[in-house]
Length: 584
Ligand code: ARG
Image 1 (cartoon, rainbow, N blue to C red):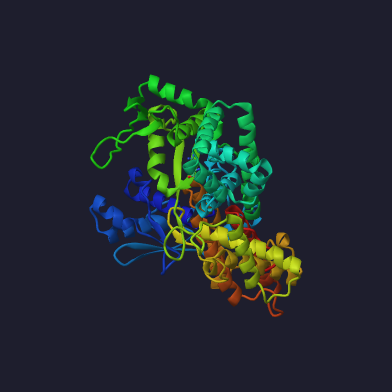
Image 2: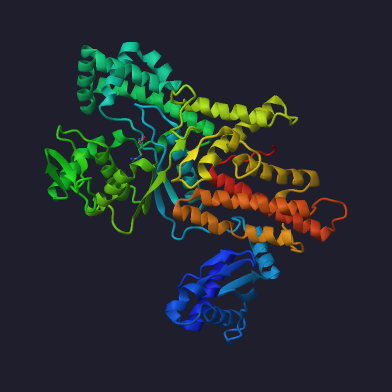
């Protein structure tokens, strides 16, 4: 085990069991980074009541068992020092040798200390999911970016990831969208949709629907033939969808998102099973009729007046809705895809819906207890006015234009360097996309944040460009030294405190990657990478690598630390989907 915090947790738990009995062996030792040592354990305070002793006495006793003074096994002594301080903190400092040995292990490990899930799990990740009948907005950008990072991290851990792009590609609005396509002609419609003008297209169709009775009648008839999957209607629907998906793909390609057409599993896919979903739930008494609508009433949900809240699965007019398809997504993913875990990466505003769907699916037995279903709630992206993000004119934003702007601005940031135009374009693309993606990932997925180009493109602070720059700088050290990172494998000597601190920081990589996957928390990895880059900066300012007066052993060790840092930053940014330019 290379993660210092986990290694110490295990040690303290052993000492707890030895000191107070086996029932204490899984108490959380509350290990935290400390100002006065590498870590502190706060467990003595939390246990003192239960043990009826002062926290200091408890701490003292744990310390004695940790260090072997209490006569515990001496063949595996505590790899460092333990000190009781204040009211009962345990200050834990690891020995340089322990850190050096663990760092050498991950230096030699092709996975840099990241383990593999055992056994591997099948994880379905529902993300992106823009609506064809409405605009793809910045919110979809964020669910796309967060979902993609989660897909990458699970794959890296050896899990089987099934991406599910639950496109909004079905339902009543498609009647008017198809009729509008006939009005303006297939070619014009395709051109408009491919260009990302889906919003304008929708509004034009909607205007006619609201004011032109003849169009309105046609649109309604079209919904009926669509539901019946009449061939000509399906052909037109395909034309509409294909053009729309081509636009989505443009956005995905520019962003470097791993979604492909094979991952499309939109609402339309469930059309055939919705009646069955309703029948099954009704026959088993899980869904009941209420004012003509078929509803599930999962316990614990009540409205303002205390009345039970329904998850509606069939409207009184016989139509199906969002609740119906989402019940179907669970049934399909559990029964057909045989998942162990499902992540729904969707806006936080849909939390009531998701929670009712999960509970209803559990009632129906479609979601057995051992299968985890989680709503990864995505917070809103706000404009500088604190409201939902829009363009200056107040119109909603076309995503490709937003992404292009990020690249243009990134090129300005890079203005002073001596790149050819082609190089600049390539680097600006990496930096622009890295900035946008990292901004989404570096805050906890459920918090809101303000979309601000200047801040996300800054070369200092917790930004994508700062981390990209940090790894590019390490690459340039290797270029200058004429060394290949893969060949810089030590041995390590940790003489300077900044070397020790950097090595200690690097040991935590595996644990934070696992934490990101376990808790769907890309921001944890992001802040770990930021801390790593900062530890590297301190190291680099204090510990010359290539200077003439650096002796050979020190140079070898420092190059190895550079190589390990580079690998961790590169792998980590890769897991976030942030590109790593060679130069910057
Ligand atoms: N299309 C929906 C929206 O834009 C998101 C769908 C998310 N996935 C799901 N299974 N409900 O809000």
